[in-house]
Amino acid sequence: MSSLKIKHLISWKDWSDEEILDLLNFAIHVKNHRANYLGHMTGRTLAMLFQKTSTRTRVSFEVAMTEMGGNAIYLDWMSSNFQLSDIDLEAEYLSRNVSIIMARMRKHEDLLQLRSGSQVPVINGCCNMFHPCQSLADILTIALDNPKPLSQLKLTYIGVHNNVVNSLIGITAAIGMHLTLVTPIAEKVNIDEETVTRAQKKGTLSWETNLHQAIGDADYIYTDTWVDMEFFNDPNFAEKKKERMELMMPYQINESLLSKTKAKVMHDMPIHSGYEITREAVRNPRSIIFQQAENRLDAQKAVILQLLEV
Image (spheres, rainbow, N blue to C red):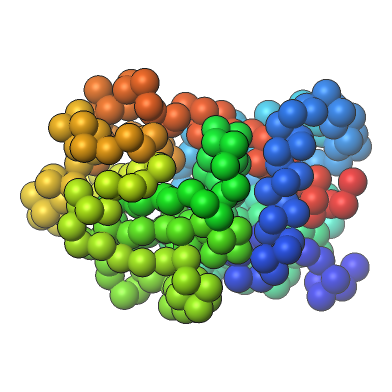
């Protein structure tokens, strides 16, 4: 099989607006018709390769394949030979045994190398630059929550510019939803300029420094951890963590902030309660965080089914 003919999900940059919208609509269909896909993966295997820790990504992909009648193999990077060999060579071997690969990688460049060797579709389960599966579940959650056309809704992200933000910029641009960013920490190395430029041309992206103004007319407010999960408990990162917390604490989603908006609350998890969001805000009646996490399952099913065209 030629890699040129294989459809991957690495980032939304490789997908047209129409393809993204089709995938979203398909995810909605899968969510509402789970029983229809119980046997669609019979005889197929998903390889799940993890450099990064995970709860939702592993559970949702493994359950997705199991519920659809397939199998999922968990591969820990450090206990495999991926750490010892050229990534593309290991990927070519792996892809000769499985139908599809999901990789959760630290470096985007390593993910691209894996894709170059794979003879089956590769799904980005998260890397330092993009998290497309998360953003698909996010928009799926909004679509299921609100009857209005997505192009009439406003989403405000509050926090650090990271991989989730890059993917949110990409998917909201494709569907015409306006995204406002309140990102006091936005290091250039973490911003995908191509994705930003695409959204700017479509008029779906803006930045705001006034937090209260940013949330005033928002339908949804979204936050994420201020420190990457790999470094949160790392003593070598303690000083930078302290600096970030001091800078970001005024942007915490809490009951005081929620009193100034009617927006619903989103967070992609894992949650560091007391930092980017309080437990009270997580449990607020307007929180849809756990629906958002639940929808990872149906989003993953849709991605797998679409890439394998079954």
